[in-house]
Amino acid sequence: EPEVTQTPSHQVTQMGQEVILRCVPISNHLYFYWYRQILGQKVEFLVSFYNNEISEKSEIFDDQFSVERPDGSNFTLKIRSTKLEDSAMYFCASSEQASSNQPQHFGDGTRLSIL
Amino acid sequence: GESVGLHLPTLSVQEGDNSIINCAYSNSASDYFIWYKQESGKGPQFIIDIRSNMDKRQGQRVTVLLNKTVKHLSLQIAATQPGDSAVYFCAENTGGFKTIFGAGTRLFVKA
Image (cartoon, rainbow over the protein chains, first blue to last red):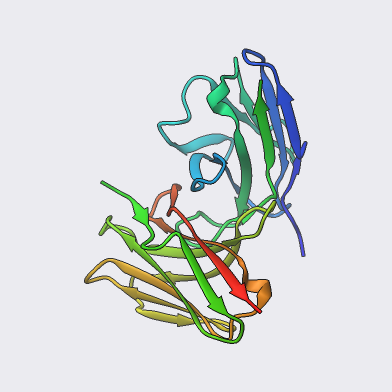
């Protein structure tokens, strides 16, 4: 069964540094998403991406964050000038149709630790 | 405001018993609901979904019930197995691209 894959599985970064989290969505999917999960808490929506542009974003997704689909297979989340509170699991997800119509497929996440 | 929450943070059941996990939502405009299962170290995994024009949907060993009058969603797992131990999240979508997750319920299955 096709999977969403994320790399790296664990990223350790010094506060203030930039970090790029990478995702390879399922190949025929058109909608892409990033979520964050702080340890022990619920999964929080960050952003959705369709047709090479952001379709919706949450209040968490401020100017510090950006997303990009640099080629036909990768989908990245960049966090500029990381803060301690950015430490969390970051999940990428994708779906063939919009999330209002079908569930998303999630990767196993990247654990981001900010020191 | 929009929010999805859960009544109980943990649920412990005996293997073979049925499990019921509950969820309350506050956004009456939500029209699509999903249950996800999250095992340790993994991402959320789709279990079952339901649209607001339905009040019940069944899958393999799982049933989702939707009560729009009281804005309540439940997940029933029949004959619970050790492999069902995980955190279960309900999630809602109001028709856009944003899915809102609830707080999660941890299910423990005792052998």
